Length: 186
Ligand code: GLN
Image (tube, rainbow, N blue to C red; front, side):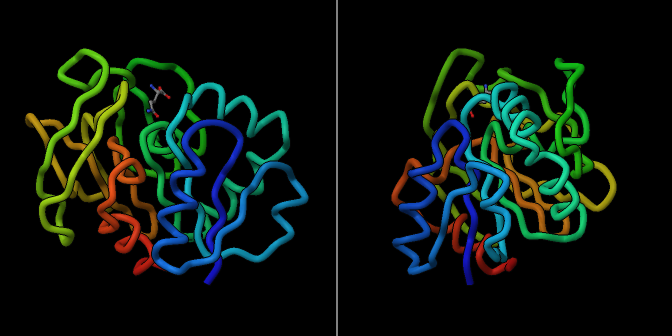
C-alpha cells in the first residue's frame, strides 16, 4: 500500500509522520509528474483551502485528482482538505473537488475564536483527541454521507463511500485512530 499526500501547502509533513508510525509508505504530490507514481489513497492536509485550490488548478493537478476521487480513490481530508471535498461551502461561493454531499461552513468553528482542543467520540474510533484550528464545521450531510462525530452540536467528521473528512487535525496529536480508520478504507 502506498499513500500520496498533497504537499502544496499546509500541514502535510505531520500526516507523513503518522503514516510512518503506522508503517505505511507515502510520497508527496507537488507537481503533475508525481501523479505517474502509483498510489492507493490520498490525504488532503489542513492549511488554507483557497490557496490549495488555486495551486491545484495552476499546477494542473485539479482535474486528474478530481477524476480519481470521483472514481473511488480513497481520500482523507482534514480541515482545509474537508473544504476541498465539500459539495457546497455555505459562506464561500467557490467549491473545489466538491465530491462529497456535505455543506461546510468556513472559519466558523473553534468556539468561534481561533483554536481549541477537546476529546470526543468518533463513530467506530472511540473517544479521540481533536484539535481545531480556524476550523470549518459541517452544516449538513446529504446523500450517502454519514456524520461520524459532533462537538457542541456541530458535525466535525463525516464519511461518504471512500471519502473521509475531519474538521479537526488528528495529525497534530499522537492518537493514530483516524489514520488507521482511513487505511482500513483502502
Ligand atoms: N480556515 C482554513 C480554510 O478555510 C482551514 C483551516 C485549517 O486547515 N486549519 O481553508
